[in-house]
Length: 456
Image (tube, rainbow, N blue to C red; front, side):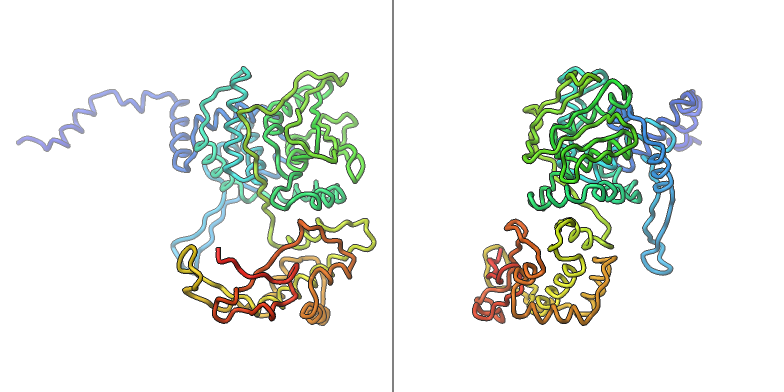
């Protein structure tokens, strides 16, 4: 009796030399790595290309130990008791490989930092542009194979598998040493720009090679940055991640040295006007220019800052950032927290949540009150303004005051000087919506009086 075709095929195939067994012990683990990386969405070849660039730098030993301990802790949390579905945390294939290979670990840590401080899409497009520019310039071992989608996906994988690492603590260490500088920059720029917290495309291109060179030749090479754009990420990258000494000169805080060496490998010059296209120089020990990195026409998209912070204490961090600590007339963090909480208490009862039928339609489909209980606001403020101590009686007093005067008046009476760019216009429903506040009933509780909503 004839055997089934599938069984016969299996028997015949057993006569062939098994290809898998013929693979070398070196090739087999590589294929397994590729399979595991592919499951996460990453690309083995792209990771190797990025490691060729970023893997040349040696990590600071403290950073390496901290990173390994932070990301190498697995965990599992049930969505609800007795649930078979949960949230797993811990190292994935990308980090597991990094923990075994030093050059790959260096790559992951550096890209984890860049991904933490920058918006992923604009960072990805600029990384691709920088890699292509290096290839155009004839940099050894460079290529132009990197694609935007692959880099963006790799940054996503890297961010998800290194999310346990507290980059915000290192950012805080930098900002704590330059409080006047941060306040000065915060008051001169829009919040969405945060120029001191985002690398310019030109600085990113230069840092990819210059940091490795000054690390390899600390006595003979210096990276000279012409302005403070990208100050915070560059200091975290160069000093805390790679162990280099960074000197900031001429800042409102004076000359600040990040590191112990008397000979800084990276210098950053404070300027009143920031020009992101200014060239970044690589100097020798005699301060003569060896290399100059200027913005190429191929790299034109601005990288956007992505400020990620722990919710606990974020409000305290913000009020400290926007107030000059050396100004005796400036309101304290406690007063600013009082005003914020009182403002929320006054505004909350008159807020509406409106869902419109469609774009350009003025009649709402649903209109509901969006009131929040006072105790919920207080609980939220205790988390948001961690470290700031207040009492309910004072909050009540500020709440009563804000019912009859604007926030500007209240802040100015506390000595806080408002810039136009710091003002926020808050809106309520227009009179055409049933139940809306009429013009004569507008409350003087916002940064300026409330304005009519435009139904966008």
